[in-house]
Length: 245
Image 1 (cartoon, rainbow, N blue to C red):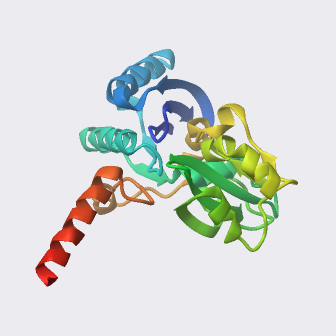
Image 2 (cartoon, rainbow, N blue to C red):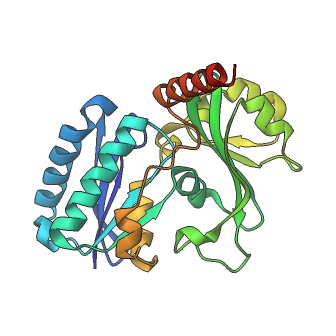
């Protein structure tokens, strides 16, 4: 089975290919505003390097967010188009879950944090589903605390137990605060700050594919509304207040 994994949730996007869990290659690209063009070019290069065509893809694995609103819409639209054209089965994983997966040692609490700007992070807390669980699919990441958009300080204040690993662009951006709040925790830096399509491509063949109805209704996982949506909702609220008056 040839699996294509793609992620456009971050400024650094990526695509990766694997055959039955064995990595074939990966390409990265930057700038969310140009993800539509860059994604197509990266995929062309990746397929050419593996001597494959789109007809050879047996499974799509897509990161649904949270992250860049524009990037997520581009990535999901691209994946849905490829699915519709080739009838390729699709699996999905949220970016926070994917960030946590490589760091889930037995018993470890892993906090995935994505920089949400405005001083906030998208954050969730995970633990390995069981001591026997292999990291062979996303279900190995048991969600202890559901994804939220908060300042790092408010987020940490809600946790009963401190995380032992903090990973993601949000953890890196707020590392000074986190080192004080969680002095014993490891803060991951470097390329591992981004969701790994290499890891996703290697595990996706073991994940259950979405039903066709779920693919058609699939939407980005935003956690909070975009700035434009917040403006729209405030305008609606003001209008309702005017009618009540």
